[in-house]
Amino acid sequence: MYRISLEGRGDFGEWRDAARACLAAKIPPHDMDWRLRNESAGLFGFEDDSALPAAKGDASVSVPAAFMPLAQAIVCHSDPSRFALLYRLLWRLSDDRTLLQLKADPDVARARNLEKSVRRDSHKMTAFVRFKEVPLPEGIAGRRRFIAWFEPDHFIVERKADFFQRRFTDMDWLIATPKGSARWDGETLETSRIAAEKPDLTDETDELWRTYYANIFNPARLKIKAMTAEMPKKYWKNLPEANLIPELILGAEARVLEMAAKAATEPQLFHHRIQAMAENRPAPALPDADTLEGLKHEARSCTLCPLHCTATQTVFGEGPSRADVMIVGEQPGDQEDLAGRPFVGPAGKVFNEVVSQTGMDRSKFYVTNAVKHFKYEPRGKLRIHKRPDVTEIEHCRWWLTREIDLVQPKLIVAMGATAVFALTGIKGKLSDLRGKPMPMQGDRLLFVTVHPSYLLRIPDEGKKAEEMRLFREDMATVKKMAEQICVNEVRSMRTDSTFIDMSLGIDLARNDG
Image: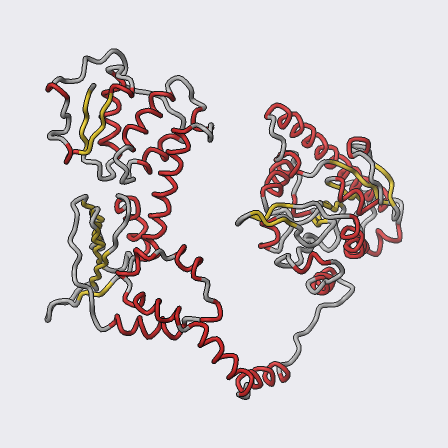
């Protein structure tokens, strides 16, 4: 059994060097005893004062890219067993580079939990560090100086020092913690792993914080579990206003009843004043209803189906007011719902990339969706896409039809089964329609292909590559069809001498240049 002692205060290089030496000596994890330095003397305190055996090969080791950030976070954890866990993972990765992908593996699961704890502690540090200004000595001018005290669970000061340097670069500051300190003087960022003692930071601003907090505390929205989850009680002792929280919680119910009684008896003069101002405000000029801008303005207040109740906003189409090619997708995704623009999420990036690869310009397309509101299923903090049903598609077809009437495209590209159904009413297999131009009313063509989001959902990499190739071929066909449309328009212009004379002033039949 070989024993190695480390300082263990967040220094990744300290563990890395020791681990390399052990790997070079081919020492398996079960023969290693990793200790903190205060548990045994010396950097390398081996049993029987024996040194590591001679290296039996190259000390370097190739690891997956994901291992480095994982190890750098875990080294900052305060669990004494973290070094043994990391060495065990490192030893196993030499035989199986896919180890970190096995979420059910006990070592991997434990490592992820440690990493999560360090990330959470880092987040809390950015949220609860509060600086207090330190007065400059009388007669001395200079930058303002601040000091803060924080009590992290782990050795995260060095990890977060850069964050505070970027955020508060215009002042001198010191963050002191029991697990190290960080200092910025406007030019140099210094960190120390030496434990600091808590300074006395009480001053007259503490009372201001208590007054402010007492006035913004809303008893009607009190959720104790959520509040303590976001601001655990261990941080309260360093926040002057926190000693008000127990009293405010106890009196919350009485204050809610008091607020309700006042609301029922007191005149709402302030609200009346706001209403009067709103009524006297001149109405903004509305865009022409027979334009895309007018249609977009009208769609913002669409309530044709229940989807408007949960979506952030209507996501209308965008592009030239007259475009030869119109792209119709299914519905907005999560990012489109937030941005208010179509095809800006992951599927939109795939679409943009393929359009660019085929030599086309997206800005010349009119891009829209069959359904204008995001339909989703909440899953924790995520909003998971949910396919719109027939009724929702049919309600939204009214908007899509008006877009087509205004844009007057010669070619409509339907991406996915929902778009095909909205445009044609057909519910057949997409594979039966894909890649086959079909005539539509108004002397325009319909071309069917898959939606880019389908490509992102394919788990098999081989099949995904094949489907991506087919999608590129479809978009190359779209390019050829668009080019043919332009050629046909030029030919029709050449045969229409009246149009040529009035619009161009030249005769293309006699001047091909």
